[in-house]
Amino acid sequence: MNVSVGLMEGQSAVEVELTGGRFVDAWGETYTPGRYRFTSEVTLSPSDPGSCAFALEDVTIGIGFHWERKERQVFRGAFRLVKREAGLTVINDVSLEEYVTSVISSEMSASCPLELLKAHAVISRSWLWFPKANPSRGTGRRQSQAPDSHEILRWYGREAHPDFDVCADDHCQRYQGSTKAFAPAAAEAVRATAGEFLRYNGNICDARFSKSCGGITERYATAWEDEDIPYLESVYDGPPQSRSYSPEAWIRSSPPAYCNTDDSELLSRVLPGFDQETRDFYRWRVAYTAEELAELIRARLAVDLGPIREVQALARGPSGRIYRLKITGERDYVIISKELEIRRALSRTHLYSSAFVVDKEAGRLVLRGAGWGHGVGLCQIGAAVMANEGKTYMEILRHYYRGTAVSV
Ligand SMILES: [Zn+2]
Ligand SMILES: [Zn+2]
View (cartoon, rainbow, N blue to C red):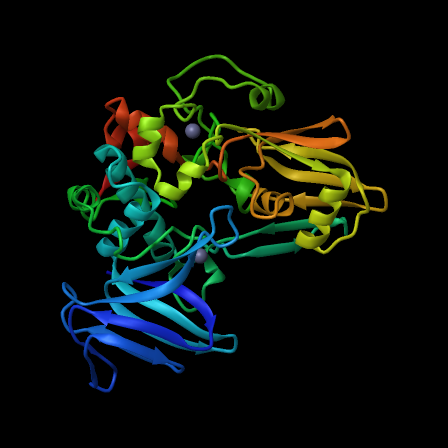
């Protein structure tokens, strides 16, 4: 089982450093360790997958998110360049188990609880394999012209990558090669769950996950197409309880939930270094002037509304996440649909989530929000707290994905 991962696109030339042992191209020519520069298509396969690696400088991670930065990264497996109109695409062909080891090391710190790493290994493997097991089920990037010409309806799915299975970024799953891949705990979690998938009625699940649900997980249709997926329904992220809140009251308060934690020792064990910059994930606040917001909408959506007068939630999912938002300016209005497009429109990077309420305070529009990410499926911070409390990976997965089972 091999996975092709897109590392970079649109390059005019690519510099790569080969290490550990020889690589061989499609014509049998060998490449000894050292630096090479390519401006056309090539496939370099490692002669010994265990010892050979390649390194790329300046790989951008977190593209468009608030923690975007460049890093040197090291990869196992084959190095492949594909030429497209925009330039060269860098692809890494790597085994599924190696990919999963890297992903859980990149997504989560290797010092986090083992049961969390095991849960993550199962969902990363399942998420990756789901489209291969369900080729007919398309979840590509969609943009529909809604009946109202003022409405922008858009979501982002898996089929945005014709040349490879997954990209290395948060759009798919964060993959940073082998730099951190061989932390013993991550490797142990992958070995302990080798070949295991999350299944519903025997079928591999589309195992979605995000950083923090904000206390209640979201349903699939808020983020992607209008479809009810039984194992991606909304659940309260805590032990069973009977209290209920209106979405607004929920967002304005800070109710107990697994992911409502300020255990900084646990968070620092769970989140890789850069994510620790984000500590206000459970409840957060952002403020704009009417002009700042108008400028943002103009830059992000290419529509000129004039100074913004009102931001209004037209529809919310069960976690409080907005999936239809109306923004009215002095000249015009726009309706934005689906959660990622809303987050994209309302921030220079990405708003933490679309679960927010809007208040007018001293001439500014203040967004008070809950959670980090789309909130569908497993909540990574909540799962970390569950693991820390002694729950097993099976219990964690059953909590977030109702009615599922784990098996090879
Ligand atoms: Zn992607
Ligand atoms: Zn949560």
